Structures are given as C-alpha cells and as structure tokens.
Amino acid sequence: MSTDMTQFPEASRPFAEQLERRTARLLNIHAGMAASPAVIAAFAGLSAGVAKHATFGTATREAIALAVGNQNGCDYCQAAHTVSAKRAGLTDEQILQIRAGEVTFDPKLAALLEVARAAAANTGTVPAEVRDHASAAGWSDEELQELFAHLAVNLYTNFFNHYAGTELDFPSAPSLT
Image (cartoon, rainbow, N blue to C red; front, side, top):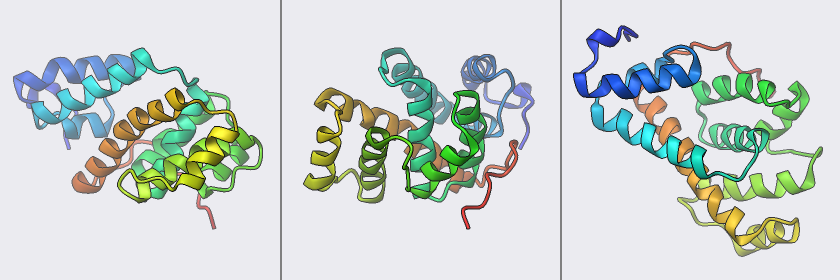
C-alpha cells in the first residue's frame, strides 16, 4: 500500500494530511483508508469528535483501545496502541494485563475495560452485572456512555484492519502466552 498522497483520491488528501500531522507520519492504516474518501473522512470525523469531547485521560483511552483490539484480534491495533500506551505512561506489565483482560493494578479501570470487552464481544450488549460493577467501581453513567464513542473508533479501526489486511508499521505487540 502506497503512502504517497499523490496516489490518493483528491478528496482523501486533506484527511490524510490531517492524520499525518496528528501522528507525525502517515500510518499504513491511514494510507489504506485514504483509498476511499468516505472511509477516511468517517474515521477522521469520528476520531476528532471523540478527541475533542472525551473526558478520559490518554492512558485510559489507550487501555480501551488495547482491550478492544485484543477482544477483536486486531494485531495492527494491538501493536500501534502498545506503542502509544507506553507513551501515555503505562508499563509493559500493565499493557499485557490490559490486553489479557486481567487488570490487577487498577480495579476501577478493570471494571471499565470489562464493559468495553463485553460490548465489543456482544454487539454492544453489556450484561447488567458488568454495568453494575463498573458503576460500583466509580464510573458515572455519562462516562459509561462515553465509552461507546471510544468503542466506535476502535471497532472501526479493528474492522478496517481485518478487511484491508493492514501491514504493521509498528513492532508486533508481545505475545500473551
């Protein structure tokens, strides 16, 4: 897949340039999306909207991406978000725990990620006991609803990468076994 913007449809180029500025280089996922103006525009709009209005900190957003990426078996997203989670301050051990669904270092985060995994695995359906556990752990209704915006971004990229077979441009995420 070419990362040469002159090869993209004209309507895709502004979105590709915006994403390149945000990530300091044009990632393979963004180059793949740029083949269709609708795909890259939808991703850019959704991710920009979430970024502008999100209340979760960077480490929490990265944890969500790692949990959802693992739930969906997205190697690209697990690799990319392992790198960005480290930049957000998560340790290698914490990243492995998040990906494995065995978070012991932060019970509140563990409860949120349990909701994320359940929603990703069950087309948005979250068992009442999982939601109740997250509420009891201190997550507000507004925060639990915000989680679905983060899920939308991550499901979009997971599904796109599965469809496109996006080539890794990050080191592979460490094995969980």
